[in-house]
Amino acid sequence: MHGAPAVTAIDLTYPAGQPAPLPAGAVAIFAVPVYGRHVAPAALERLREIRGEGTPAIVLAVYGNRSFGTAVAELASFVAERGFVPVAAGAFVGEHSYSTPETPIAQGRPDAQDLAAATAFGAQVREKLAKTGSSPGRNPETASDTAATTRTTQTDSMDAAKAPATGALVPIDPAKLREPRTPLLPKLRFIRFVLGYRRRQKRNPVVLLPEGDAARCTQCGRCVALCPTQAIARGDELHTDPARCIRCCACVKGCAFGARTFRTPFAAALARNFARRKPPVTLL
Image (cartoon, rainbow, N blue to C red; front, top):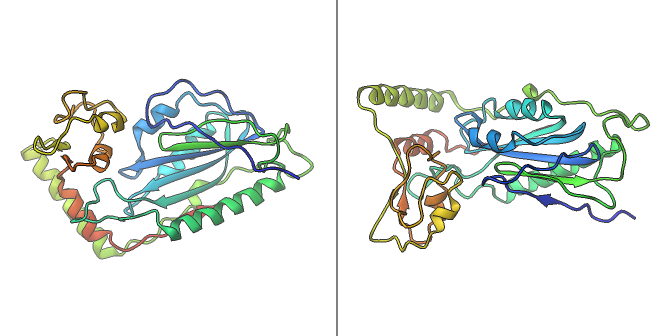
């Protein structure tokens, strides 16, 4: 009887060493955050050196309930260029970086419904891979992770890319992954807001950054540790380097003392226009 497959996660949210190539007998899961309808640039940079050997891959994007745009297709193309075969894809909603109690945007997500959908999707992927001889099995080895998380499980020593007895791996077409519908009026309102914001920025450019509150900050250094781009220096926690900051708000959400805030007009616009719950979407 097969035991549970081993799973190793190497978090590339922060700079790390070059991951080892993932053999055909592994199964890789790439999960990345969406920035402005694209894969976050920092995620692709951290994944640049990862390599597969005909390795089946599941590509996932996590977005803040507005739009995942072309992110899933970009990720599928990116990993295919590095020796992976994208066999399944999905887009899941997570609480938006700009979400606050005053301007909630997908607050509390992923929730129980999202996790149930992810579990069901995982079971479907496993069933699909089993038909090609690529499902996780006994004596697994390990592999890698993404700027959000890449997970891998190692199967028995078998070339899943060929697997003539059980069927060859067939890559998915990520263009078939359809976004949940956004009502027209909120979409138009948001477009009008964005156009107005861009006009104001041209007239009077303003650089928006997370801010520190000296009255609350204890200089515990947690924001320094959480920042994925080293935009906050130890001993100078009240300031943010504009050249490095990617506005991910990890420092804001991770501060136990509420000493960091990020004020952006996008928060209210997103909360107003994208309050309707969007479900996860998947493709096999």
